[in-house]
Image 1 (cartoon, rainbow, N blue to C red):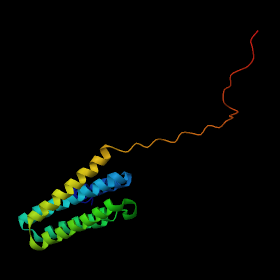
Image 2 (image 1 turned 90 degrees about the horizontal axis):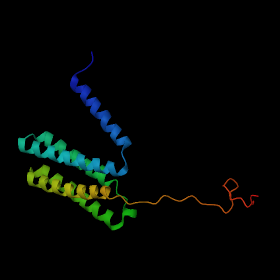
Image 3 (image 1 turned 90 degrees about the vertical axis):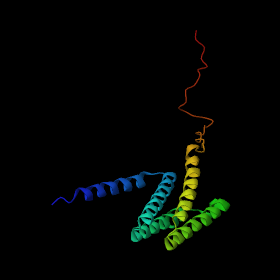
Length: 157
């Protein structure tokens, strides 16, 4: 009648993730993508070691999707210049390595991808730790403000 406890927990988790995404800053969204990719690669590694081929393939596919459709797609190659071009090439490399790890069943490739993702995430986290200060624009003062207090020129007797 009410469903299983597991389905309720799954629904709650999904709502929590969706709420987190909706309220996250652009910087936090990228952090969440890194976290998701790292979790998917860790799952792929566990499944590879346990011989669960189908689960390994699904986890690697999820990691590739996060890298290509999330991290790579978020790059602004015009505004980002050379840095964005280099990140695009690195993300493409990570996707290719994940594909090779799946085909060749090589956990050391997953370890390499994990190391690179952690380095990228660490650099991304460092950016958030030192946000660029942006000065708030000062309101313009007009030469004459009829509502501004004035000093009286009257002399008291």
